Image (cartoon, rainbow, N blue to C red; front, top):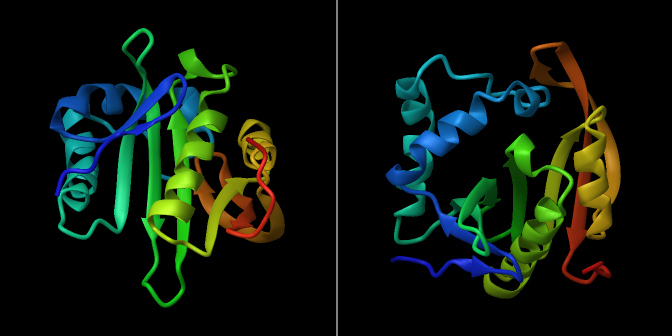
Length: 183
């Protein structure tokens, strides 16, 4: 089943495909985006393909539990970044979001705009009860995005993220379907 893209005022979130691999490789190779990323910088396009192919396969399943979208600014057709939503089993009605934007597009409100759209999708289309996100405690920009949409900091996981700089603590955020949202 092919899902329709998620649209906002400026953005289109389309499930990733093989045609996005060069952009994804470039995005993952940016030193700035790697700072708080536990994946690490891929050494080659082949390594990126190996990493991303399961995401593309997940997007093509009849029941998609792990969505990965390419985020595009459709006003100028530029690719901005990646956004993911991983669903738990139906009993918990929970999802987890993650995102990564190219440094050329930081500070323009794209992450907040995309996150609000994914929250809408999660609560309205997937009938989720709770959506959560993790964030390295030093990642001030992501903390601002999560809090801007109304997510609440619930706790701190000690030495949870294996980053290049060493083990990092991680803030846990969540928002419930009944919580107020900032759009």
